[in-house]
Length: 120
Image (cartoon, rainbow, N blue to C red):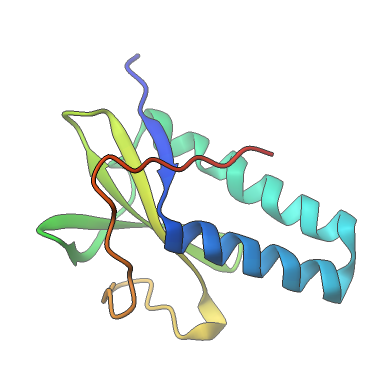
């Protein structure tokens, strides 16, 4: 099976860092590590079935998909030609995330050729 590489935009990386830091301060290192591990494990589905999750909007002419993980929504783009999934944002549902609609009000522009990955 052809797999896709999963990358994270600068905005998504920032959201992951901020949320991990918040959980670390609120609930401790173990809980923060568990949260980040669960998020990252759930991106594995995107590597093999990137179009399995519904389209909730468009960004730069591309369909935005939403993958719900726990109480967070991962918004991502699929580039079939490059075999790359780019997570463009990670938003907690309590912060106004619309699971059925994505509006990139604050999404930072992707830098050409810029690739970001996260590992646990």
